[in-house]
Each structure stands twice: as structure tokens, then as C-alpha cells.
Length: 461
Image 1 (tube, rainbow, N blue to C red):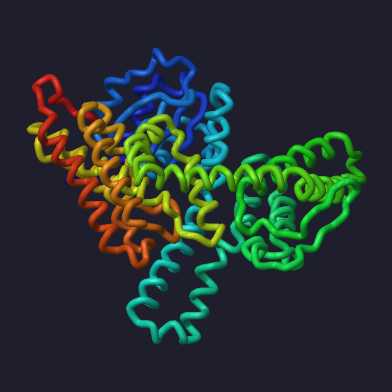
Image 2: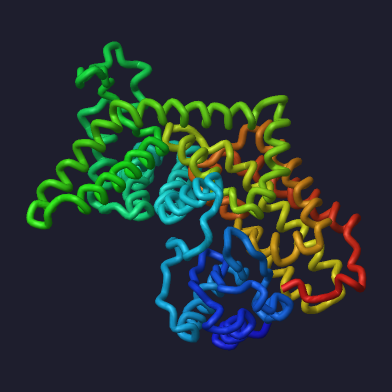
């Protein structure tokens, strides 16, 4: 396969959008180049879609999003920034864009918070999965010192998850990272009763603060209360900095910000939002098991629709909550089934199409979906031809149902598809069956119901 000329691709994209005078800002995520343009009518979308290396083009959230795939997007982005003269924008940072509706803003904020901490969660989850498999295969190794050491390493990210969430939230909300870290540490302070052991405690100590009776319990199993606490902290910090004289700012602002934030968090925000989070996680558990897996079947079908709408980051809260509460991530099989079904449908298109250009796009897109990155397959192939996307929804529904009725669970989030074998512990065989079922149903349905008509024989990317 011919190596993509990243500089030429960036130049062609730059010309197709109308040049620098039509460009407001640029950023990128794991697979997409995200551009904000002045006038969308000046964008030559047909030329963009025909460019070598481009797997799909669509508009969402006030952005022109060009799918290039993992790895490629980073290199094209670097060349694009050189051409445009714009300052580079980190992947996790927001582009300047029209104000989104409140639900979309909330979901985008959750994505901005959780995506940067994925490497820590994935590393911990993979190590937990490997240790779990080792412990099952070789019980004697569980007594070794190195095994105990690795268990400590693998559990740290989950035990201290509120601190990681607090740091990431402070970055998103524009607060001081270290003040955010202090707020997160307060919520899991060693003097507080561990949230996981409250049920077995005979007497839970209580603080009497003004008119509030505050239980001395940590927030080890929660993430939403932490996000809300740091949001409040960031707002308070900005308020104090705008009003406190510069000579007193170093003393007054941090002190007042931390004191007010922690008081409000432990008296109001924490109890309210921990209740809401527990309700949401309980609802997710019920949804995945209701009607002998019917709820999971529905979510497996709808999951790729939420990806298209950019709403899939909301699942991070559910998965993080499940893991931080000391349990398994039972949402992962739903996501994995939906993602691998996209691989199956895309692979069927690759095998059935007669156009070499279509094969050149569909094959790497299917491989990307098999590894858990579905945007190239969804936007570059399946959604363009519609029927493969619908067939993938069917395959995802069947696989998600199977994953729920067999009780598959994972030790991390953000990992699906083939890499998911490393985080499913003792569920390796049923997980392999889940992938085969979801991908196989999607492949067979696409092969039967999608026709490579002459009108469709054009390069989808």
C-alpha cells in the first residue's frame, strides 16, 4: 500500500476548505481533524471526500470533521498547522465553535474530562486483567511478592480515580490544577471512612457543621461529585481573582477557594450528586439485565447512533463509576459488540465491492474498528452506504445481548474489540464468542442485503 504523503494531504485539505481566510481554528482528536470555518459554503466537500487518506467528512457541533484515522491525523494536523499559520491546539482542547445545546455541552465536557485520563485507566485495567488471568491459571503465583506489588500498581488508578478526575476537570474548567488536586485528595482523604466499607461499619462518624450533619465518608467510588466540586472551585477561583487585590491574591484566593469548595462539596454537592450517580449506575445495571438482556440488545443497536451524534462519551461516567465502586465494567461488552459489528459490516463491504479505491478505504477501516476505533468504518464506509450501518446495528444488538446473558465484565474502560481480551479476565472464551457473533451477524447481513451498485462505486473516502 502506497505511503500517504501527509504534507500533500494537508495542503489539499487546506485548499479544499477555502484557504486560511476561511479558517477559524483547528484541532484534532484520536481520528479526526476538527476545523471551524467562516463560511461552510466555501468548502469543497466532494473534493475533500475524494482525497487520498480521507476516510470521511461530516459536520457536527459546529465543526467540519475530517476522518483520517489514528496516527495519520497527528501527522496531517502538524502539516496543516504549518500551512495555516494557526497556533497548534492540543487534542483535548476545544475549538472555537458556535454554542452547543446544553445536553451536547454536558456530554462534550464529560469527554474532555475522561479522555485524557484514559491511558492511566487502560494501563491499570490491562494490568488488572493480566494479573487476574495469571492468578486463575497459576494460583501459586498469587503468594509471590512481585504479584502483590503489581496488584498495588494496578489498583492505584482506581483507588485514586477521584484525584485523576479532579486534575482533568480543573484543566477543562480553567481552574488551577493543583487546587483541583487538593479538592480531589480531600474527597479520598485517609481519615475519611472508605466508601467501599461503609456497609460493614458499625458506627459512621459524623461532623456537625453549622446546620449540616456530614458523614465522614470518602468518595472513592464516585466521579460526578468530583467533577461538580472542581467546577465550583474553578468558578470561585476566577471570582476571587477578579476581585482580590494583587498583593493579597496569593493568600486569599487559594484559601477561600479551597475552604468554600470543600464545605459546599461535603455538605451539598457530594451527597446530592453521589445519590444521582448511584441512581444512574443502578439504572445502567438494570438496563443491561432487564428482560433477560433485552435492554442490552437495544443499547447494542443504538450505541453506534450515539457515536454518530458524539454522545458516546457519556458512557465513560457509567463505566468509571462501575469500576471505581470496586466492580466489573458490565457496559464494556455492549460497546465491544457494537464496535466489532462495525468491523464485520465494513469487512463485508471490503470483500464485496469491486472498486479498488473502496477496498483501500474499507480494509484499514475494518482493522481500526476491530481495535476499537470505529469512526473510520462508521463515517468512511458503513454510514455512507446506510445498509452496512443498519446491519452493524443488528450485529451489535445480538452481541450485546449475548454479552449480558453470559455475564461478561471488564477491568477497564476505553478498550474494546481485540484488545479487550486483555481486560476480560476469566471471560476470554465467551468474549471471543461475543466478537464472533456480533461481527459475524453484521458481516452476513451486509453481504446479503448490501449491493455494490454502480451508483455506489465511488471512493467513500
